[in-house]
Image (cartoon, rainbow, N blue to C red):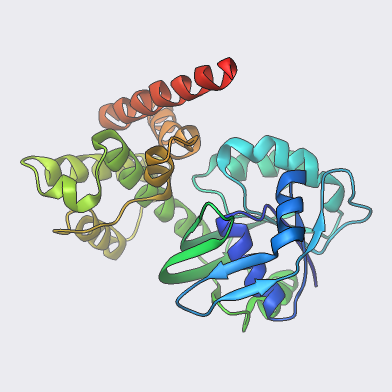
Length: 311
């Protein structure tokens, strides 16, 4: 199976690197600056599951000559539209397109562009970041990838995909419930992103202040209400586990959105928090806390954009 990984940042570089390390046929589609850095230094992974330095096969926009069997989109939400244009020549009639992005907007966009028959559901869970040297730092032991047909049906193509993913150095699972898993991950990230970014603190720091845990649970309740109204209610075990995560004493946990904000980098405000609040409005579900968090993040992002325009 020929696999194109769109992006070689902390997520795409990790999963794509593990696939390449396991001998899979992997090519990365990257920007010229990232290509130059990878050619000079290699793709470097620092992980509790084992370090690796690889010499990846690379392409940049305009260099794709034929379709791939699978395209893994691993960019941030604000880079989705550009990434779609760059990778479109790699998508043929039998190509599977899997998006590692968060939320559900990306799924709607990909379905509209490539057709629902080419898009496969996907959920990745990993804690990674890029350091100043461009190395991929795996900051916990979680590294899982789930995938499957969105309608829950078995298929020959996802069986082939599963065969390529198994034994590749991370936890891989073919599932018949991928749509529910995508919504549940979104609920968690919208809740955690809105809470930590609005309060500028980790889960444990927020829990430690009076009213902090109540705020986190209220934001979770809004996210669950939106998903339920949309026809995708989360499971009770998921809700129970998420409540425990969001109120854990002394927890250092925070999502990548919060880490990006702390670094003064762009954040995925629209697809994770904004779209959840927007769907709530369309469905008649009140989401005042999600809306407040989104406005807060938009002020931050607009400030970044203005600073960038002045440079």
